[in-house]
Length: 259
Ligand code: IPE
Ligand code: IPE
Ligand code: MG
Image: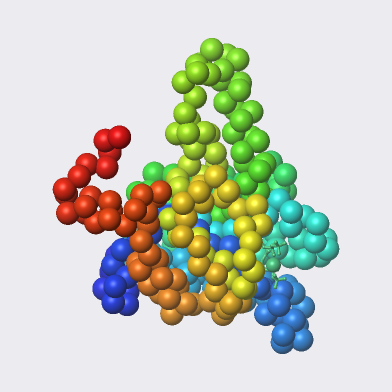
């Protein structure tokens, strides 16, 4: 698989550097078919493969997928167990192929609460792909943005107490670096039609473009992904400035790095 931006629709040449996806709607997809929710998660696993492959082909550098939130433990035990089994199976089945494509796999979230066999699988997959320099694939398992920020604060405060970090010099970059996911999100996609963040990447989405698709996750495919990328390519990202300032900066007339 090589990076082929030409696979994108017209005007979508401007790719997000970091694409994050809230993969929602598996349960409703199954219920609409009179099936168990777990069938929806199984169908969702196929959509995960499709979207990873499509992101790779388009040359997206970082893809972060929300697979299981820190709040999802509240679901019935059978559903939680089914999801964990699916996650373990997907990691085992696809790690080798992703490794061949130079994908660096990272599991983001509090993995210490996961079963020992799943933790072992995660450690193996992360180790196998740790030296890869292709796309970074973050899979969020037992992830919540608030627990992530809390853990980062704990780390940073410890560094201050140990004299390794000067409190007066603490920067936004230090906070980003202490998070599970250090990179800002450019485009956030949520499938399933809900307009909420559900505790996903709160710090990193400070300036993300947000695209909500009504399509349920198991039906989300390359065509739907390209719609989102097309939306992103058409956005003017002003970061607090005016359109006129952006136009001037693009023509090289002003240096926006100067105050
Ligand atoms: C998303 O689909 C998958 C997970 C949260 C693990 P849901 O299971 O939330 O599907 P809906 O929202 O109930 O349709
Ligand atoms: C968000 O979906 C979590 C994942 C997609 C893994 P949920 O279905 O859990 O979100 P809420 O509960 O509807 O906000
Ligand atoms: Mg849901």
